[in-house]
Image 1 (cartoon, rainbow, N blue to C red):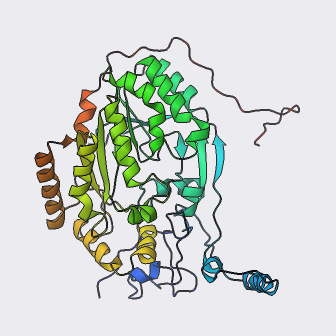
Image 2: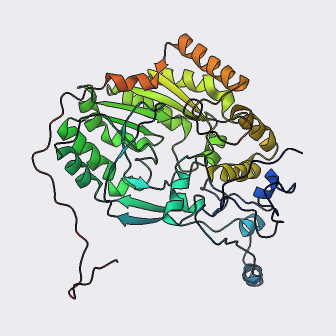
Image 3: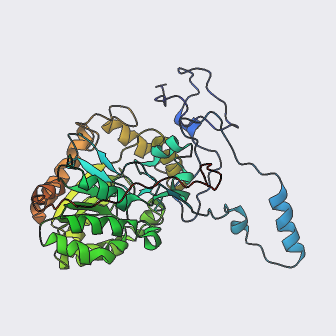
Amino acid sequence: MPKFPKFPEGIAAPFPEQPRPLADDDPTLTPESYIHPSQVARKGRGAVTNLRGRYESVSREAFDDGWQAIALDNLRERGQEVNPEDAEEPAPLKTIVTEETAKSIISRNSSPDLPFNLSLNPYRGCEHGCIYCFARPSHSYLGLSPGLDFESRLFAKTNAPELLLRELARPSYVPDTITVGINTDAYQPIERELKLTRRVLQVLHDCGNPVALITKSSLIERDIDLLAAMAAKRQAIAAVTITTLDPAIARTLEPRAASPVRRLRVIRTLAEAGIPVSVSIAPVIPFITEPDLERVMEAAIEAGAGQAGYIVLRLPWEVSPLFRQWLQAHFPDRAARVMNRIKDMRGGKDYDADFATRMRGAGTWADLLQQRFEKASRRLGMTHRNRAFATLDASQFRRPLVAPAARQPVRSDSGQMDLF
């Protein structure tokens, strides 16, 4: 029997009630070792469990202590009706937002397969709860789970606009397009109240610095006044992510994001405002969202999108076991088939981070997918969305003359630094 690819140390250890492999070559190390035997999907959440991160030294597992059954019996004795399905459904998970004073705000990369060098993320974690999100493993650095914690324990960089203004004021800053929301969606639900993305856009608008946005939220329509003014000077582009047109699949795949129909309306609204907009078909998941590839492109161009791009499902680090759990909970009938196809495109592994293939995959199936995309693009007259970055103009940048001072930690009357 072929060996199941070993996860790095600390990732997705088998659950306590399941036999733990004795060694890396233990024949009991199978994909089923990483699937909880009684998985229950939470309404409104993408991840099935709070899978421990790769830096945690302990593992926690929920168990039934009997009190839930006693409480339900008491309700029945009082004559109250108890829905059996509600009794089995996990309790709603509350979203917790923590304010963070960041030390830096612009991230730089030199990846040859990315069309931008600078990015900015006002938030850590994302309430949209997309199970496939490649940013999930970043929560491990915070000592939190890439699973449910990633979508329910969020961090807001409240000083992001001030940090950005200070960065743009530096003599060493070279004007370039800043992509906002590349890791986590800058327009996730908490943005409605905090308005950090709006303030970041205002800084970029005032300084004449180009911006690129990618989102799956309708909240971007709130900022059309800024984006349209920047687009008129070739300083703004946007991309809307649409994985599938099937609302039932989207509801489990991206539980708190806008519906596919609503995202198409966002494309139309942005295009009518003169903002260059593209559709990002990401990720393409074999046998789940993959059949919708051409239909998404057709619907997007009808709505006003001029460019399109696609990315094959990526499963780095903890995303792989989390996605396996999601498959088992929502698509148990095709879980093995989906994973086998993913491995076909990743050289027999769940994921290959090689720059040349990580976005597209490799092999026969990846080649066929690329041919489908290219043929549909030619038929519809769409260009690749990465080319839109080359149209942005940074020559109109105006360096700010005054930048706010850095925020200092609050001290109590005794001189002790106040951590809370």
